[in-house]
Image 1 (cartoon, rainbow, N blue to C red):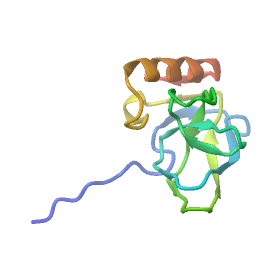
Image 2 (image 1 turned 90 degrees about the vertical axis):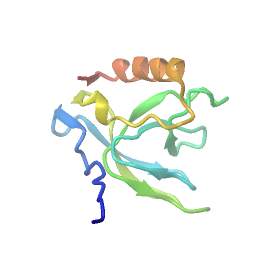
Image 3 (image 1 turned 45 degrees about the vertical axis):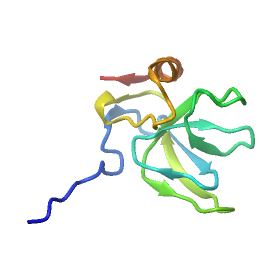
Image 4 (image 1 turned 180 degrees about the vertical axis):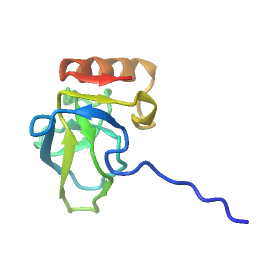
Length: 119
């Protein structure tokens, strides 16, 4: 018997949101392999990447990726993020392995400022 693991579906982390206000279309930077529910930040070049509080460009958490997206070297893609005014299931949010407890606390404060409430 083969065990199957189901990943989080597009928008599966959302509890509630305000139609027309909560979402933004953004460009995902090259060499990113992101899942639905991944916290993202805006890089210095204006594109979005996985949130990493230890980057030197001061990028703050800017939202949560609505759907999974993967880009290759030199490739960018359009994607949707939850950018503000939403409730999400905290257990379904992905922070990435580069973030420790202090990094996540800082990212949570960034999300709080966007009125993204974690339940």
